[in-house]
Image 1 (cartoon, helix red, strand yellow):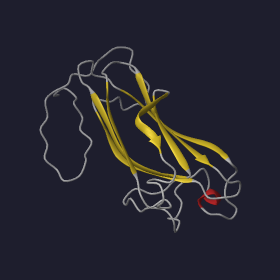
Image 2 (cartoon, helix red, strand yellow; image 1 turned 90 degrees about the horizontal axis):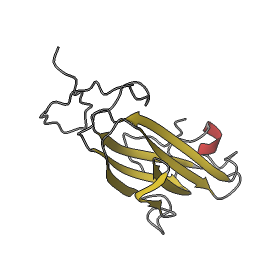
Image 3 (tube, helix red, strand yellow; image 1 turned 45 degrees about the horizontal axis):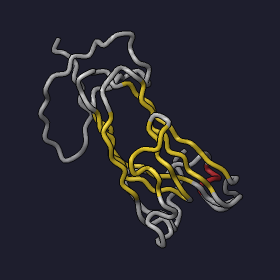
Image 4 (spheres, one colour; image 1 turned 180 degrees about the vertical axis):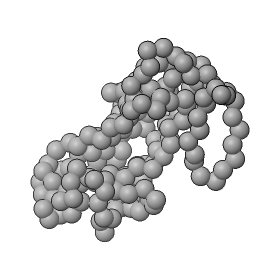
Length: 165
């Protein structure tokens, strides 16, 4: 759930801070102590195309970025990010992943240290590659045909590498 920007959080507009509930985005009532997991999954459909993940992330209190259930390179985010700045900074996490027909999942585990305090995260970034458009469920066989595409734009865009009709 999108929550309003808290006074000690960094603004990574146009991305918004999200939290398990509206009450978790404030110190009253706040959220219980514990770890909250946010996840998105996709299928890398083209067998000869390497994908990339590039993220800027901040969390209250602490976060770990996982890729396919393992800590991503650079995925242990310091508390706060960077240390000594409340939550006014962000960490950058970037890595490549191998092509194939398997489902890939990016998970952000956010830990709230104090019972009844605010907890949330903000993430801004991109995932590139040839992805399935079916909620992360991989097709029975590889039906995608990658084609070379050249695009110039000032903002990230979603590109489909579907074969010509």
